[in-house]
Image 1 (cartoon, rainbow, N blue to C red):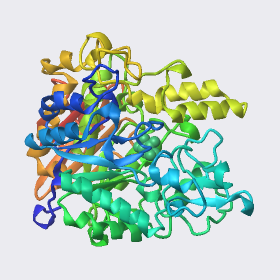
Image 2 (cartoon, rainbow, N blue to C red):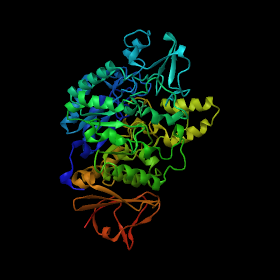
Image 3 (tube, helix red, strand yellow):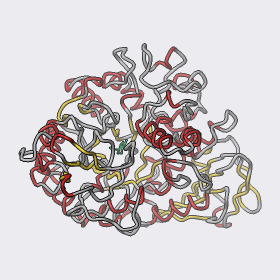
Image 4 (spheres, protein in one colour):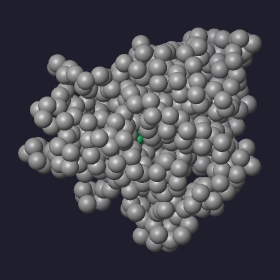
Length: 560
Ligand code: NOJ
């Protein structure tokens, strides 16, 4: 790869840090994180060396799905503060050279949005066509699967007008009708409102689902979560995104990233290639869903490193010529990186967490890093369904019970895979509620906060926190880690993940031992001599065949 031929962009070079505001920092003692809490922590965030913040939804919402059910797109949720707080926070980030990306949740709104209240009030209301309705006199609507519904169906019957409305997620999240030009216009206006305020981009929630198939046809043989691919192949998806680009996006210096369920290596270029004029980046789910069956039941592919490497490598090279990718391990919908991909026992937690961070920051594609991972926060592993807040776990638990299924098995799997694992309050220090709030937090603090917290790690040079800071600097100092070509070594090795990043005549070698025992990385002789750029241990053992790596050792070398 040659730097002279690459189109450099800030959103390719930056590291994104995701903040889940509800769980970051509470400033007013109500047990819920808020915008003023983020303001209090601006210097901490800047100290990480990250460049872009992605903020989960802070818009007005009744909160059935923690802000992903928006009742007013141009106001701030009361729990989080006011628009003045938002402006101050935005300015605070910008002053520190950090860009801010907001969540755009427009596949659906809340059922409490004024559009939906109007829409459901009568069949001839002007807002009726803002949503998808199926008149009950036409019989039962064709099967549509819902991610969250307690009965599994994405059609909810609404008595008032004797019709069903479509909701791919919860009943309280009716899908907006993008086929209606007025809906698109409202959404584009709202996007202009936020860009004019100065935000720097949008992460677009399930944006691949916005176009629905005309007439809601039946899809023979496609049931349950297999419907995701149908949802992502709506006939006018690209038309709408292109229109969005033309009407809104191209007028600002901003970035966009699709949350792309249903995206794969054969359809991704239509979404992110520059000449398509749609979006900049996408995140796929192949790697985080490896090892997961329906309802997030964990299967034996969890931790199959050979399969994992194949997925990551295929995606890392997919954008060699066109488009751009992302790298991520987790977010508010997935378990903590160290619990899912690493080893969260006391013996290996810190080193494995550092290894996972090394991977994200040395791969090709913009890294999306989830708050709390920099200190190696672990899964909460709740024992009881009563500890959960997430409607996904709760609804699936109830659905499994109603079916006479094994609800205990679901609960056991969700200790490893459930969404609430990553939503517990940020562990700041050893004080009550981990320094997150003076009141009882909305979700239990994970009980290891006395050992794992930012205050303890702040002044410890070898802490995961300080290691992460070194990594963000390392990425900035080495363009090869951003733009360099990626090449996988040892594809069949079950323990070692090794690859090179090459830009012009510079070669960087990354060696990662994904296991809790030592292993030799047998690599070609030409890669044996290098300067260590970062190492999560003090030593690196050279052997004839290459390097012998300690459990969860991560080393980055500049080859001489
Ligand atoms: C994806 C979001 O990340 C998730 O938290 C939410 O529940 C669904 N989309 C529905 O908006």
